Image 1: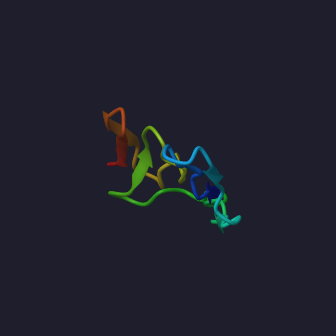
Image 2: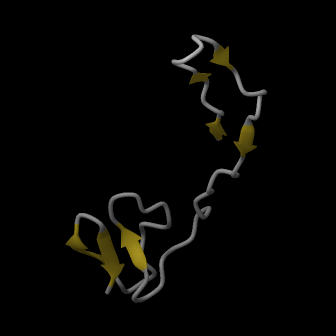
Length: 74
């Protein structure tokens, strides 16, 4: 959830403070849900930093690490 507020302005010449009316904008995004169960198909991603999908490959494939961010069923 992101919240943005209008800044308060201070006038140096008059020494007064002007406060903008409350103008709060709220943006809500639903959480991303990882797939439930299942296996990753041949050539599919099966792991890596931030990956939330299946981490088990369909037979006869195995999850091969390419780098810290990507693993693939080969």
